[in-house]
Image 1 (tube, rainbow, N blue to C red):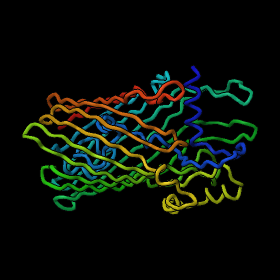
Image 2: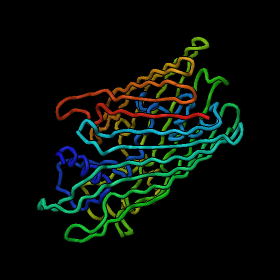
Image 3: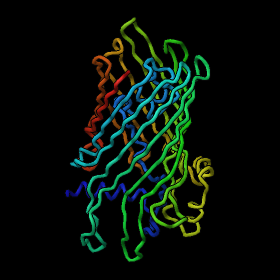
Image 4: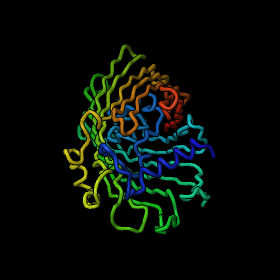
Length: 377
């Protein structure tokens, strides 16, 4: 197992394990640390080709992984889709991936239902103790299962609600001198989404709003306190579609997302840490906007911008840009490209994350590919 895989695996687990004692720092750095961060990974290749842009773009089947309010506007009565994303391939990892599948069905012209499954594999990990002695090898994984309902509120507005079950198995068994017993974490959450379109044929402006992962905390031990928050998020998007003629159109859009998770007090005393973990879930959403637990505005926003060219709904070209300007959370900035072509009743999506940076500053997501297929009925 190479050193990159070991480092990436432990970094992933670190995001969801509790840390009680850290070395003193000359400058306090607070971060928004959450469990199950895989829920923030865009699973579909359409949005992946536009810098993870999706909230307000014209409706498409993959919206059942995001803004489900758009599903009643889709022409097809039902569809099934699958997606696959090899993750961190540029670090030499071959068994870390995100796979997803989903299905939606229109009950009538105004209502639809949808269901989906996301599975994230972290690959094989060889655990060691503090003296670097080999312990058990495990294969951590996480998944979420969704069921949603969407409806038209008018000819221009629609809404969607999704219920989600989350299961996260990072490590099992007892480790360390304290012999803490680790177990799989489970919790429930929900999404609420809205969509607006200006015109009947989707030409002109669109708007989208998504409140996602609104749910309970999650724990990986039998302890009832110090549970981890899940990545509650608020996203707002705007899009504009221009139809050049009956066969050609181009669409532009911008999404802005922000985590509704209070920052973790890393360099703090026990009383401060207890106060942080004792927050209720609802209080934590509002506290994430306060000066005590919130991030500065310029560091808390994640921006996606992109464009999509459409030829006769059979061939698509896409490009996008993603920016997360928080230096303490990776400072991720990258370009993406993507395409789609249709064969009979099926569409095939692919997107590519353009390499950026170099050396130790190289983007670990460089060369990321997403593949997807939609079967329309």
